[in-house]
Every structure is written in structure tokens, then in C-alpha cells.
Amino acid sequence: MAAETNQSEELPLSERDLSAWKLLRTFRDALDRAQARHQRHRSFEDRRRRLKLGDYLSLFLLGLLNPVARTMQGLITASQLPKVQRQVCTRAVSLGSFSETQDLVDPALLETVFAGLAARLPEAGTLPPQLRAARWMARDSSLFAALPRMSWALYGGGRTRARDGGRATAIRLHLDLDLAKDAPVRARVTEGKTCERAALRADIQPGDAVVADRYFGQSYHFLDQLDHGGSAYLIRLRDNGVEPEILEELPCCEADRKAGIQRQACVRLGGRKTRSAPLRLIWLKGITGQILHLVTNLPVETLSAADAALLYQHRWQIEYFFRWVKCLMGCGHWLAESPRGTALQLYLALIGAVLLQLQLGRRPGRRVWELLQWHLCGMTDEATLEEALARELAAEQKRRERARGVAKKQS
Image (tube, rainbow, N blue to C red; front, side):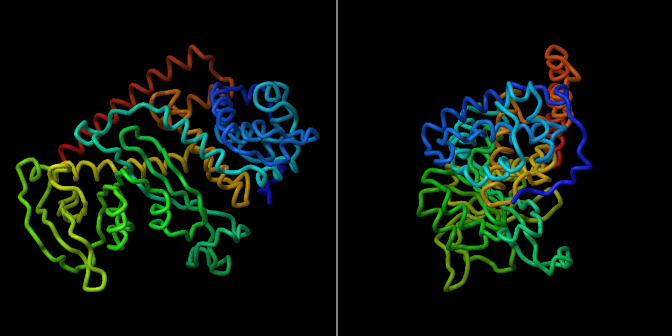
């Protein structure tokens, strides 16, 4: 079902509001290559169909990138502009066609486009060299609030949604963020109640290396499954007050102590019925003085305790990414409400993030994103945009280096 909008709140649009951008051309090129590997719905082969697959997805992506057309009604109005028809979609689009097409597109197509674009990203240089021997990926998920009528996305109850009969709805985005690239490389979109461990179990491949937070460490059987599947991991445990069985104390060097390592040992976790295989437990003192319990299946020779502490610190990149997607990529308003439609929107948001990173060399902050949107509105030309981007990107780099310096002093 299409997302409802208040037509009276829509502002008239002009071509100047929606100047085309080469990100859409890059997307169309990647989409054309991906279509050769996927079978399209037979409706798109019908000569009578006026809304083509590439036009629909390009118009959808425009709604996420553009600061003006943020609703379905706004995109329909934009499709009537001659320049939009020349560079985004070939003809005006009706509201019914746009709404109906969401159920004809397989999200796997966009998953292929996303994976292909992500593979082109270079390493960002934020991960220390000693941690690049393995492809470390931060794994987590985030909830995106859905509308009450999207009952297929039922998540649970709670006081915050008591007005909806105690039924909360949410979409869950499961994500793998490549820490060397500081970019998403694998994603899955589900209803909110989907188990995060089950989703990771379905996605992970032998040879993957995962760093994750406490939820993934709640099941010791799950840790054994990762180990038997040939995947390395560094996962924080939830402190439940139960002491592990110590098999062997492991020494800590000076570098470990400087990194805040209090202790490390080979242990078994759980009781008789839930006993884990032998693994390495690291006691890390956090910035606030709290003791964090990190567990890994890698030996000291492969991952030192100091490097484990540094790696877990980099896990926060995925939290920043979720915040970025929610605040800047237009995911606060659903342009589609079906399971397929919401999956398309989230995949397109990830594709937009990757396209921006390919264009700029890094994911833009708020000020840089605002400059790009001013350009999309026709308020600045290419030359002025390049100068302003160079200034803002340099300022962002200085702020990041300053933040890293503060973090090092605190640790």
C-alpha cells in the first residue's frame, strides 16, 4: 500500500529544484550490469508498460538524495518536469504506477547493485595495518519505526506504542560494515522481530571476521557455531555475574596494559548444559572505568589483547553509520509500505551512501551533505561546489584527527 501524504502540504516544484547529478548515472550503469544476472518480473517485458524498471528505481533514489522531493507525491510531481524526464525517468509517472511497481521489483536486484558498488570502494585508511590481515566487519542491526498499519512488521509491545493497542511495528536493517573501508558491504532487511543472531548465521561466510556487541554474545552455542563455521570473531559478553571456568591464565605485555587490558585467559563459559568450547576472554577497562568482557576464538599470536581493544573501539563505526543513514538519507518517511517496498527503500539508501563515498572518497558529514544538496537545488555551480567541498572535507579530516587524539589520551 502506498504511503499516504497530505497533498495540501506539497510545494510546487521547478526544474531548478531537481537538477540532475551524476550519482544517478553511476547508479543506472550499475543497475544495467546487475539486470543481466537477474530475471525481471514479466510485467517489465510487456510493451504496454510505461514505467520501466530503471526509471522507477532512479526516481525512487532521487527522492532519497534530493532535499525537495521527500514524499511520493513530490516525486510524482517531479516526474512531470522535462529535465527530470530527460535525465531520470523517460515520462511522467502516475501515483498508481509508482505504488504498484514496488511489488514487482525483487530486492535481490538492488542487493546485487549494492554489493557491486561496495566492492569498488577503496580502503579508508582508518584501520591500523596490523588489523588488516583479516577482513574485519562490524555486525549490528538497527530498527526503523514503521507505521501502525504496516502490521507485517510487528515488533512487540511497550508503553511508547500503547495508543496503537500495544503493538509496535518496525523494520530491521542487519548490516555488515567493512572496517577497513568504513563502508557497508552486506545487508539484510527484515521485520523488526527477526533474531539478529539467526540473520548473522544465515549471512556469514567461512573466512569472515566479525566484531559485534553484547547481544551476539548471549548464546555460547552461537559462538561455537561461528568457530566451527571457520569465522573469526571478537564479541563483547553481557556481564551476568557468573564467573567463567579458567583453563589457563595468559600473560599481558606492556602494550596490552597501556591499552587498558586488565587480564586475559583461556576459559569455558556457561554451565553444564550450555558449556562453551575453550575460548579467550579479555578483561578491558573502558573509558568510564567499566570492565568490558571481550571474547575471541583467535590466539594471542593472531590478535593481541591490545589489538582486540583497538578493534572493538572501531566497532563504533557501525553505530555512526546507522545514525548517518537515519538522519541524512531520507529514511524517516516511508515512500513504500509493503515488505518489498521498504526493502527497496533501505537498499537504495545504502546504495546512495556508497555512491556518495565513491564520489567524495569518504562518507560526507552534515555540512558536506548540505553543500551537495544546495548543488542539487541549483544554488551553486560545479566549480564553486568543488572549492566548498575541498574546504569542508579538509575541515572534517582535522576534526576526525582531533577526535582520535582525544580518544588516545583518554585510553
